[in-house]
Amino acid sequence: MIGVFDSGFGGLTVHRALVRALPRHAFVYLGDNKNAPYGTRPPLDVLNLTCTGIERLFAEGCTLVIVACNTASVVALRWIQQQWLPHRARQGGVRRNVIGVVVPTIEAATGMTWGEAATGRPAEQPRTIGIFATPRTVETGVYPLEIGKRRPDIRVIQQACPDLAAAIEQGAGATEIREMVRKYADEFRRQLGTTTPDSVILGCTHYPLIAETFAEELPDIPLIRQSEATARALLSYLERHPEYGGEKSDGGKNAGQLFLSTGYAPDALPLIEKFWGGKIGFRQA
Ligand code: DGL
Image 1 (cartoon, protein in one colour):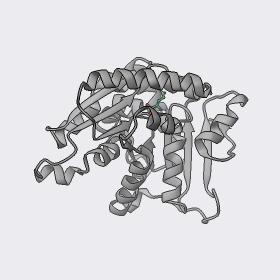
Image 2 (image 1 turned 45 degrees about the vertical axis):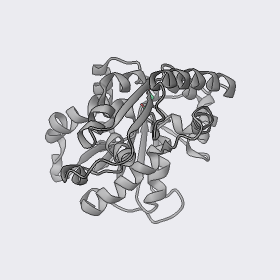
Image 3 (image 1 turned 90 degrees about the vertical axis):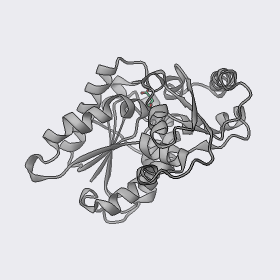
Image 4 (image 1 turned 60 degrees about the horizontal axis):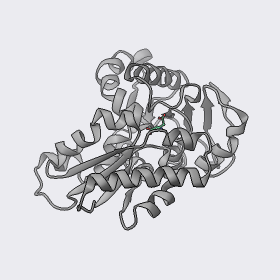
């Protein structure tokens, strides 16, 4: 069984792509809505909450957990993988692993996997990549750092978008969202000066929901789709590590899927439908 964790409903954009890529696998989604948004929380909070969420998904029987939240991935994932997971990875004789959304996104943005980076492939396009993300994600600098490991020649321009994920999560209207995106796009252009970026990463799982607004405010700049990149990475990961795929569902529509939330108001239902593209029922985690 594959677990997908996010601070709220934004991870459903990734989850949807994963389910499409692996329609016969059983999935459990967990949104920590009670504690969302993570993007403005202290790092230690994000770390503790992410560990608790993963623990919950392991308890549900998941052998592989995708942290479908940029904030949680950049703040907590490395520590979780190196320090926290080894004690839990084989409890009860079951192998477990946790992966995130950052590396797949960077691979999509740079066109390079780790293997290719190691062979020192000559530099080629792209030269400048933009990233729009939560303040916490920007503050960690993980995207520029990880991109730099593969392609030190790439200039990475980060744009923090305070309150944007929260506004989306709270169902803010189109005009309010457009004003926010316009403001952040203007700040981004000021940082760019005369440079034109080759692409822009929407580095928050909430942003695909307003990708059209981003596309309109950043005309002619390709947007990197994190959900598809993560789905491609998961397929390739499971080919190499079939032991983490877990049991398969019966192949029926949405079969073998469970949606858990630590707490949300019923008026969030239209928002869930938007993120998921249809009706789903959440259970209290
Ligand atoms: N889903 C989170 C992310 O991808 C954003 C929402 C939050 O701040 O909790 O960064």
